Image (cartoon, rainbow, N blue to C red; front, side):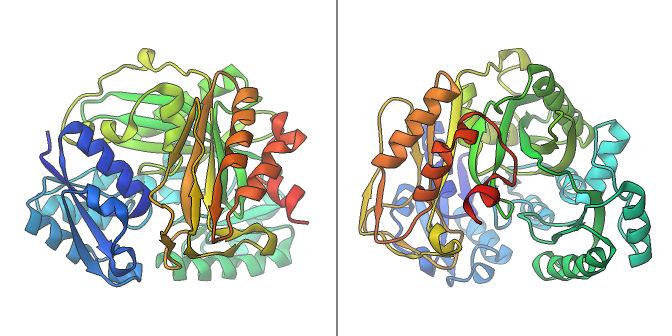
Length: 447
């Protein structure tokens, strides 16, 4: 077992890893930027080092400074959290080359699934359903126009690298497609340093369903059931839940089996998420693999009673999974709402600043994962999420009622937050009836 772990991240996920390590008797090393200096969670780490200025490019993305800190503190392993360097194969390679275990998949597996085009090709070889589209990267405008004619409009132009909705454009006709090719490639180059794109049929009104996976280095792979992440704004998730509502058990089992097939095919180990879109007839299609722990991992923890961060650490240290697929029991319903520092009434304008007052809800089945507190200043330099509010109840109806109560009880004064919009979504009849798709928020609340 590891004796000391460095956490190459910040905020909520850094605190989450620190807590898991403390319970496991593992010492922790935290790194922070000047913008995060004085954050309360840093006091819970055994040691904390400043590695740069507020800009992520000069701190949390500086591989040399993270490795130097690891060397100084004599750590055994590095946990990347999510975001920043978590899916950077080069960083994983550098960690292991320097003698520090990277708490994540192998470089080979990360490279394979991290490129959407190669992951899609692998899915096709394995017989996992994929959205109709190009068989490889788009090499020319003429090729894109030909494929679009074959599969029919609308089509989706997608960047091969990256995620979060960047490098994606929808085209409803040939003229739009010509413009979308250049726009998507340019955005992908700026965001990911890679302009490669491919083409897919655009599925109208899809649901976004993802499967949590755990795999060890001894050939054992289990799924921890699915999460529905359809409540999105511009491809950014706002609400996640498990089980996916109004999805038949047959489809749930088929999606989970397909996810395991992808992980086995990639020779993948540690935690990961296999993502799919599901159409109105419950046909599902593979879209990508996230080779890291997800923001919404607590949703799965609540319905399976499995600590995913501890499982990550155990797998990375060489341990076998402590449970088989038959041991993974899905119990009840869980919902997560992301509390973001932004103003939904003004086009989701970021709302950084000083939190004057914070009242965190409690009660049976309520959990709040966050590093903020009254007096904390939300920085404009990083992601706007200030916390994740979760509930776990015996069924979805009770979970919705509990979440509405918890959101009403929660108070974050001094900044604008996403709470008012989250309440509107939860109180909407179609949401309560489980009539979900990825266009729900734009259709109902952004007209």
